[in-house]
Length: 466
Image: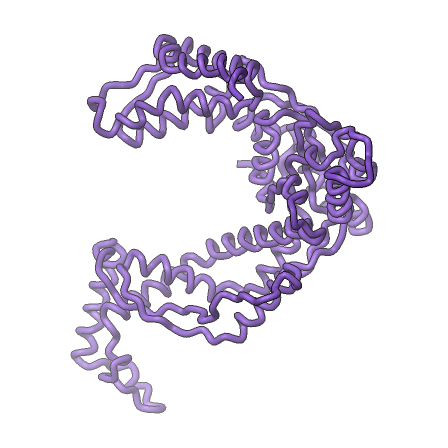
């Protein structure tokens, strides 16, 4: 497996090809943007801070793969990724500081990623500690119950166990083996669990405080309230999950996690701003009031974040200078030039994604690792059934989805979900107790036409329904 951090653009495109059909230009541009991050980190210290990312604006109808490209890119890069809808900033009650929330969410995502990795690193050590806690709950060691009392400075007495002590140790060893073999998973034990006794913070007039101040106040109050232990009776399986979290948290240095997470967010973070066309003016003439003013206000609030600014988060300050911003929109009503010039200039790379044709739908149904036909194979296999798709049936499914998109509303590949659901939902309902086991479900052209005739008929009528 190639190290994700040193993937070449060609290798990145190959990884994206496993999940996304077509859109070669978009894949090439995001691959170059990702590789440029590696290049920047390997540039001289003098130039490192001068190299800024080339943010990308994706233009294309819904359902053609814009979000999926950005999301898969973040997974390939093992980078914190946040998706926000630009249109939410035009809602009633919007305050300019809200745009900083996307950076705070990115920092939170980054902390969670680093914490998860650190937990994996200490998992084995934490598991050993958990085993001891479970064992102590089942068979308490004698010295903890006062039977063996070591004398101060008397090493001989400390290491010598009575006959009861030896029996206790042998019993503990037997139970240790049973715990490791999973023989006692349903046995209930009583354990101590740490809990924070701080109630939810709520204040009259809290609207006067901004989001950051409220978070700081909650964290301060949380730190002041003492943490108490609460006894709970759980099965060993449940207790292991709870205790593993607690013990792993004890072994992790959270200050180190936060420092690494903030660096990761700044150097590798990706923020995907969807529906950016909804905050463009739409080519209407300015009037001095109305929704266009609100949209332009949102653009001006977004501008400093995209340009590069310092944002306070509860984990520390995040500089957005080197975060990669990918914006996307259909731009049916408006066009990219309707955005304010300053914001346009911050998205120098523009990529137009192609609308999906019937052949693309056929490939989407068959080729990607997460292809819809493969997803349905997995769903039916879970019930012990097989489903088989004829080539002609896949062609018919693709043609139906394409026709509905062309005549009603083009929602891209998402239309395939509608069509496949209509086609197979009845089988999914009946499979657990309706069809005899072992008999494969064959999806043929005749079956597709029969099941989807109502969908096609409704499509033909839809333009006459208000």
